[in-house]
Every structure is written in C-alpha cells, then in structure tokens.
Length: 490
Image (cartoon, rainbow, N blue to C red; front, side, top):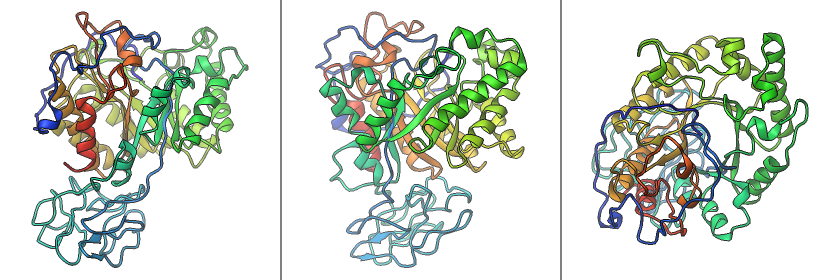
C-alpha cells in the first residue's frame, strides 16, 4: 500500500534478462490478448501509490530446497544426487551450519550463514551433481556445493523441481512465502478465489486500516477483518496484519487530535487492542506504514523529512518508536515490520528508511523486518536490480528480515510484456538469493481489481495499467511465467 505520493521521479534503468520464448506475447501495454480493455470495478484509490481494496495474505514455508534426485530439506540437510547429506542439524542463531546446508528461519538452505549471521550474497544451494551435496561458503567444485555465486560444476541454483504447479508450491521449495493482497469484497467470485489459492501468505488490503477497524472512538468493528483472517486460515495462508499506523484512511476523530498525551494514548490503545484481538491468529504486523515524505517534498535531497501526518505533527518522530514498543508489548512473539514505498533500491528515501531502522536497532527499539513495497513504474522508480540487491544486503546486515511486500509494475510508461516479466523475474531472484528475504507479496492477483486502475496520479493514455500476474479474465500473463521461472531457478 503506497501512500499519498505526489510527483515522483523515475530512478535508474533495469538490466534486462532473456526469459525465452515462454514470455513472448503481444506488446500492447502489457495486456495479454484476452484482456477485454474494460474498466476496473475494484474501488477507489487513495491519495497515492497505495493499496485500495481489502486484502489478505498467507502461507507457511515448508523447509528448504531440493537437490537433483534428493528429498526435501527439513532440518538443514541438502539432498545430493543419489544420496542425502549428513550432519544437517540447524545452526544456532548467528552461527554456521554443519555440513548439510545453511538453514534460515524459513527452513531454506542459503549457502551461507544461518539467520543471525552474515548473509551470503547469492548463496542459494545448488543441485548436487556428484556425491556429497554439501553446502558451504566456498567456491563451487564439482560435488554440488553451494557458493557465493552459485557457480562451479554442479553448483547452479535449483530452487524447485519442475513439478511445482502453483506459485506457493514453487516458493515453498526455497522456503519463501508467496503472498497476495486480498479484498474480501470479491470473495464471492470463484475465479478470484482460485487465483488467491496459488498463494500461502495474505495481506489485508483495506480491512485492517484504522477507519475500518475503529471508525468511532472506542468502537471497534472486526467484521471484515475477521472475514479476511478466516479465509486466509481456512485456505492455508499465513495472514499479515496491515496496517496499524498510517497517515491515510484515518477517521476524522483521530486526525483532529492536537494534544500529544491524548494522541499517544489513542495510538497505543489502538495498536494493543487490535493486536490483542488477533494475538492467536496473526503473528506478523505492518506496524508503521510510510512514515517518510517523498524526496521531492524534502527541503533538499540530503534532508529526509517525515510525512506531515497527525502522528508526526503532534508527537514528532518518536511516534515510530512508540508504535513499535506498543506492538511488542501487545505480542512479544509477533514479527514487527516497517513498510514503505520507493525504498527498494539505493536512493535518498531508501537511505532515510535504512538510517531510521538502523537507529532503531542500535537503540533497542523492537523491529524485526522491513517491507519493500515495490510498486514500480512512473511516477515511482524502477531501480536497477543491483541496487535492490545491495539495499536488501544492508538491511540484512542489521539482523533484520526483508519482505517484498506489495509488488506490482504498471505498463503505462512503455513497459512491454517481456520487460515486465523480466523485471519481476529479477526482483524475485534477488529475494531468493538473499537469505534474509523471507516473502514476496504481489498487490493483488488480477488486473481487474488492481488499485492501479483508479490511481489518479497514473496517466495511462486510455490503456490499462496491467500491473499484476493475471489479466481481467483471470488468464495468466507472461509476467506470471517470469515469476514461476524465477522460483523454479530458471
């Protein structure tokens, strides 16, 4: 969910990969031949770049990669061709795993250190081509060892066997959750529900925003949010709460508060009450969303500015610390996430986000992960994948997890089906190669209900934005193939 975005600048260019003939399709504005060109009925977009429909998320990881001829990894062992690895007990936090493969919290071998240690760039475990199948940090020799670049005879990444038929099956093989935003208003549409079931991770698009949960002071309404959680759980999807503190979709009774003591009390009460209601069902929360203003509204590019929300205006930047502290008090076991857009690559806003969360870690403020929204295309940026990789790495070096949290890429600025598929392939691959990157969420499934259709800052010249994996008629697009190929290690 993006927030009130004013004019934004394009950042960088992409390094294009060739995905093969499977991605070729008519090149008109990323639309497949089955797109009907009709208008979306998915609801109104909010001020800029944000999520607009009720949404959900889900999915549990099932533990590790499969090497050629081997069995799924469970506790750290990598299957070799014709035999299983030995000594594959998981390493303690911060340490290296013994022979058998590195294990992250999601159970995926990473070719490097376990969660808490220094992540290894590009170190996804390779398929073993000879006996042994050991994973380590060294160079790849013929024996199927994983290494920093996946190179060496027998060491090319094999993320998943080609038998995977859905996004979640392909993601589970590398220990990644594959998510989507869910709008409960469309759950009576069978084709829509069918696309949701390709995922195992779910984010509520609007149902858990403040104006939905507490429209009147003290009057909490969980009807739609409960429906989202029920659907996610019943369909094997891990739900994520989104979002507790955001400057948009606030009821007027909150935005009109001017007293610091009162606002801090209202904010912390909202956080603790909502988390408390779902304490046994939701274990991941976007605590604060989009705290920073867009750089074009900063005094200069070297002076990061917090968004002029009621929270910053009345409480100052301490509202971020206060929100995360309240969330930890409400559920000591929950994963607490800071989420923002235009924070994916290396640019002024991503630098500001990095410095903020770095300070939080250094000061002992409870935070577990950073969500990189990844809404791509003008007026947002399209950062080079090398910058995305570097940004993920510096966040991981803080001991935090990384999530691709709201991905879409519209086709109003010259994007073709091929380049769109390549862009998604690159971002997904970057996540798979970063042990700290635990999940990839797309901001919806079908173009039919995408928030991009009604985003007032997007000028598509009468064409459809077409930013997601399924078209209006629920047909899979080339970009779907691009994502699947990345998850399958192709």
